[in-house]
Length: 252
Figure: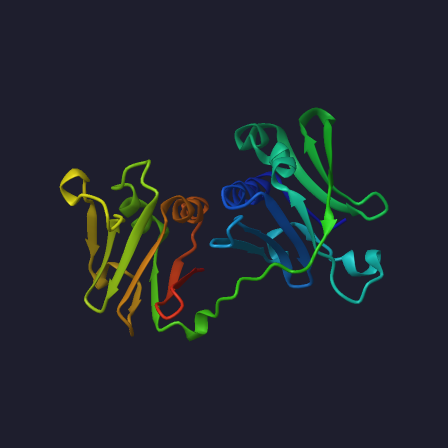
């Protein structure tokens, strides 16, 4: 067995998987001694997301993958996102029916086994095929970024609500005295025929606001919403680490 979790923990775990499903088509699954890592990346490799669950998050966690695979390196694999979403697609039903979720590794069949212990003694078992793979890791060092901004997720969630649902990209403008979000326009677009939306926030609205370099970064709004959504129900803070030189943005 890799881990087991009670119902309320399984819902949080399911929200993380749902969030990753909006990023990429594959779920990278890596149980380690310091916790479970779930990762995904989009097809163009422009967006990467990772959730780390510490062993204390689960009511029982055992990293037996090293012994089972008889390998010096820890076990890691990837699963088709459509397959794992069959387990966690309907979280409302899981919340009502499932009392415990148990995940185990079957190396002889190359299957990751999800068992849902439901009420009235019913056990639902899902055996998902996996492929062993290398560790998926983003090339981004947050310690080297000159700009560090921290806030509660609700502040940014409320900010992006001001943009149209079909808005594809937005530009984040970071200056020492303000942070602005505006919808992105192509250079050849007629500004008189496009609705412009811009929202400005002051540094006082953030828990931490450290800006060393003026930065303008344009990125996909859908991917930002994907990262913010699972944090709304948590007590976590969100931190932006921005670097203009490489035009990269790390959201942690």
